Image (tube, rainbow, N blue to C red; front, side, top):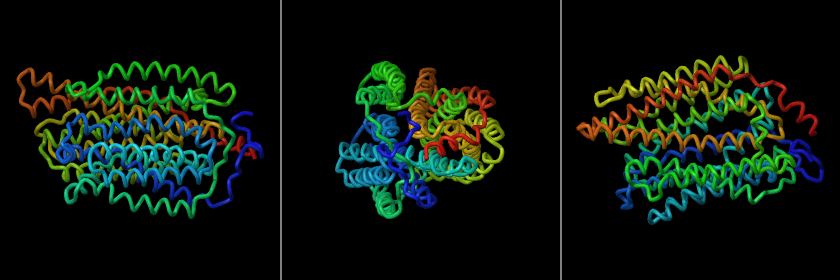
Length: 489
């Protein structure tokens, strides 16, 4: 039986309910859980002091989160095919709430790391769950607006994570980052139990254990290796990054080979037939580049503002807020414009503005004004806001219904790898550039500023190449999925 076929003996037919409240709850829940990806970034210096740990150890609170996401997300294609929406939502929010409670009560670093990992398990399920639900229940002519809302979750939540943590840490202990989130997670869990019904279909999917193991070593090894590059550049890595990277690349190659074999019988853990669509492939490449730029900037900017300009955590958090807010404000507008005009009129100027923002950041030094930093960050955020929604909608909108869950899992997995890659590349370039300037006799602040310049210069060059690629983005056919859905029913 093909992935697109449903039978009474192997599927759960969705309950006829209004999808609006369900999607709204999924959006709010996903925003809360994704926010925790970057909420720790500003808090790491405080945690190093309170828990008596090194920078390399503290970084595991972020690395462990990303690593868990990279391992779990490829599994979500199977989970979304096999289990009902309601069960997956309740499981995701339960895991997130339990992880948040563990982190809030953690007496030391070990238990705090466990809490972060459990949080990440719930987070990994939530984002593909939201995407697949929207693609399944929202008509193609309205998907742009809905994906605009989703882009708030994907881009804005991580963007304002440092702002939220900066505000909390300015008046409260770091544990309150979790105590404040916990009631929201519990309310979302209760509302989910009351509201969420099964609006997606299930089938008798089988889990290939070998694929799961290869996926864990492949994506996990790459994310771990990339996350370790920055530590290795500063001499703090426990394991040479080359080891997990080589293991990850080999395992990923075997994983791809395994999926190509299994998808012949519609039993792949992550169906790679999604890449047969040129529009999907091009859009995914652009999403990867833009998410790498976003996460790299989110890590580098707080370091620059604190260590070069000497600003406190509250000021840093507030400075990053306008960019995140701007991205959130334009997302619904961009979604509406996408429904009317398609992706190219949005992606091309958006990529140009985002690239211009990164080029503006190459001018940062010890004397840069706060206003110019905010303006450059807002420019990057505005460009990303015009790019991410059309790209994700174009990528997933070209797929048949049978590949929605696999497409959303693929996009979300690659976003996590891109985030780790962007963080690793920016931090490594910062470390190498700073070390080079220090050896030339520059003062510590001046050397740090030089490293920042090198990192943003590289990001701007890569973004310029991505801008050229944006001219090849195409609009997905409006009828994609509709004919197949009708045939399925």
